Length: 165
Length: 265
Ligand SMILES: Cc1cc2nc3c(=O)[nH]c(=O)nc-3n(C[C@H](O)[C@H](O)[C@H](O)COP(=O)(O)OP(=O)(O)OC[C@H]3O[C@@H](n4cnc5c(N)ncnc54)[C@H](O)[C@@H]3O)c2cc1C
Ligand code: FES
Ligand code: FES
Image 1: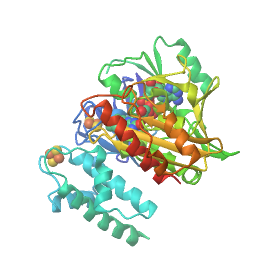
Image 2: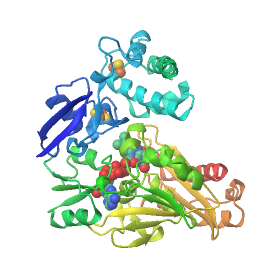
Image 3: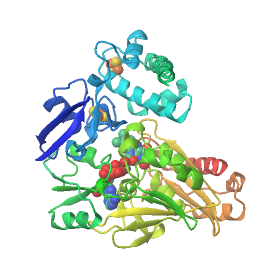
Image 4: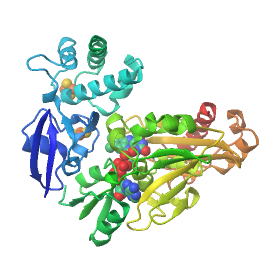
């Protein structure tokens, strides 16, 4: 067992976990944050993507024990109270989901790519979005509306970044 | 995943000590290969020794015509590093094309090179640039390091600490990714430097990454895609699987090698 202390969605979380606990298991079973989905056993589907210290990672492929002191954000931690995050709002407005299983991972990957491209001053084209979604699999939508959602959210998020400056 | 004991040593010495007393200990880099393997019960180390907490393990620097990348450097950091982009742009580009963004957030160069997957990208750069693999005990030339599929010159419990890449006058990497896994169906790294050209091929060979001698001689006399026109690789020794026959891969090597030369900067 390892005692870990990390920040999850802005709140401190402490637990004793078996050393083989994956971050996805810790979030879903210890924290009851079941918005992070587990869609595969092979680290390929991306339904489990969360942010660790500001980077998108597959929570099914990281040990909880390795995250002492880390800052973790899950799909439950991005809305501001009742106000959806612009990425969530854009998925809703663009019908960017059908069954919704891949959606938490899509949204967390979407936010990560927008942040990275904006930090580098690069344009996030539809083609770039498709390339960036390499590690997120959707069995329902055919991706078109997911790409549209992320494009829309990127505009909204850059507007927000400019307004904040 | 079976039970295991997790260690996060702060120094190489502590890591070596932890591995020495473990019954079946394994180094943990970014975990992007080892953890999926453990989840599928294909590996069950008693101890995992995470080298990600050792200071300096992820440093990237240039000195004396040599780019040194710490074994713990993540693929995303190598791809974004201005030092790497200036010194060997093809290497930054290669790192940016590994897997997907979340895999690149975690996966490390040391883990990729130690693993020596026959379809992995980094082995092509290490061999193509004639790099040196630095470990806790010695330095190993790339030509002596890769010994076959998933096999390297590393001893049990030997830890890679850094990779030293001589900076070439120009280099290029091109990969034809498997559309499902994004690993290389064929990937070719070409480099042109003081002692001539080097060409390393990943994804295609039955024994993992290899150098293409005939292409090296053609490119050493004239480093241009056209020089490769007459060269071809024998299908013997090429991998054959549901994704492509040996003949298909042999042909693809020539096509991808030309693209790599054309892209070289
Ligand atoms: C979905 C997916 C797609 C991928 N696509 C690609 C791709 O397109 N191209 C590609 O090249 N790779 C790909 N990979 C593999 C990825 O690059 C891994 O990050 C890499 O192979 C292993 O690096 P790691 O740091 O994660 O190592 P780990 O998984 O932690 O370790 C791998 C092996 O190396 C050993 N090891 C780790 N660090 C060291 C060290 N410093 N010294 C000695 N031994 C060490 C471990 O004991 C283990 O045996 C993919 C992986 C996934 C999950
Ligand atoms: S559950 Fe993590 S990638 Fe599929
Ligand atoms: S909406 Fe069903 S898997 Fe993507």
